[in-house]
Image (cartoon, rainbow over all chains, first blue to last red; front, side, top):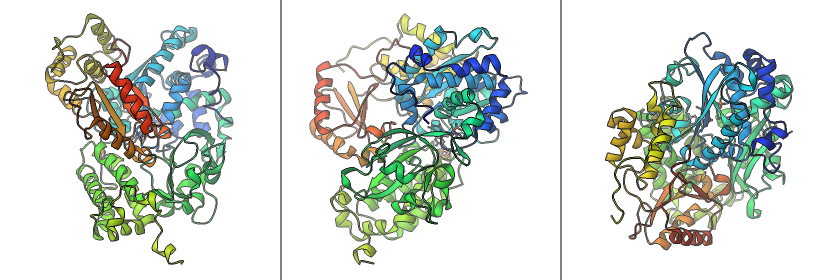
Length: 450
Length: 181
Ligand SMILES: Cc1cc2nc3c(=O)[nH]c(=O)nc-3n(C[C@H](O)[C@H](O)[C@H](O)COP(=O)(O)O)c2cc1C
Ligand code: SF4
Ligand code: FES
């Protein structure tokens, strides 16, 4: 079943020779020698592969938007900025099997007609940059990069670019600005990168995992790949599991796996740590709505919730969430929802690029208000104030960071309002920063035995 | 300032690397090399970017100094003020907090006798808290230079402080300036 991590345990799989021995770089041979670039794009379309960076946009469709008539050079840029809290899958993949990304970059660049491609890696991953650079050197030494790859007339240069520590540079137009040596301020769209991206040239930006998945798609055909998964959630997905579980880590799952199995099976998270109970999950990185245990395990209709784009968003934001980047953050019964939310809001405030006032100011206000609620100085009106600020940010900004900051706040209050009220009502009980760890929060309804 | 003041100029070797980096981008797009070169400059000139250093980078790339300042001040990895030899960056975002990041920060504060944001009197350590470093599965964690220290406990922190103190090396995001980035 595993595609990306199939050979993860093979010693030396990070080197070219071992990777090659296990079927590596076959997709480059197949594509360059037996397929036209459009045929490769066609396979990616058929595969149903959706962007793994967070938005889930169909990759083949994005590729087909690329302006192929322009006489400007075309670029493929890999988004390895990975800064969404709870997400560490790209790092794992690049560290353990760097060649799968290099192979995917070559095959995808060929499909898009790019002669120069860049991998933009968050600056903190400096050691990953070294790993990728070594892999690129090996690929070049073996004729897979540079002039006339494998004796064909296709040539490609591939470079790694470090970021400087800014979450916003994961947003694709901010990433392109950063790659041009500027501040990471997202651009107004349109024009979209497919028309005017890097250096105002047609550009495709895809996530590390999306590009890596292209190898299997070309090798086994788009139709075969589409058989994995469920409905419009095709293929496998890397999930970064963190928080209060027995086995945090990166797992490759077939889309459609029941959430309950993912959390409790020994093959994956191995259940909640310290024998405690599940309280809540943030299923797709810090930006997506938080769900309480009942709603993450089952939909509002009572059906088992699955790890797929559709099932996780079933019920809309009222009772559902999103698959997002696959950053699966688990909280046990002792976790304080308010404090966790405060850390997220502090994050968005820190990372706002400052271009739009609703985001720049709103994230600051939310952080301030949450700080006072969490530290026992809140007022009852603060809770609705937060909802109001979140509403006013949402949809009123240049880029989706504003929404990403608003959703966690709105959803935490939607599902855990009692806990916010408890903070306001019993300030002395929340003064200790470990308040819930000492005594799990029980809603008044539970206490009254209702 | 006990350290000797170095002339603001890259060595021939570093300059060679810088020139190779500039060639990665199309003609006239040399500004794209700004972030990689700022990382090199920071590693080369005592872990921070002074105004003369930024002006020097601007001259290499034939861009205006303000184009460097606005970038250097945007990205958190660039230090615009001197920092201790070892910059300890403890992750404090949700997933790390869930696994005890607060205890780690508190322990550092106690052991080093400084608060977050401060530098020890001997100039050895600066303590900082940072946001998610993409290592949440091995939380709590911290970054010191290019190294990640994961699954931290207070005992591990003690060992780390000892190790860093005895090696007495300046931490840098780049192990050696001369490696590719
Ligand atoms: C604030 C913000 C941060 C983002 N961070 C990342 C990131 O770190 N990695 C990523 O692949 N996509 C990130 N994205 C999504 C990208 O904008 C873009 O949709 C993605 O790179 C497209 O690739 P995909 O279609 O292969 O997912 C971010 C978006 C926003 C709004
Ligand atoms: S929403 Fe926030 S991060 Fe995005 S462009 Fe506006 S201010 Fe910048
Ligand atoms: S929250 Fe600390 S590494 Fe992600």
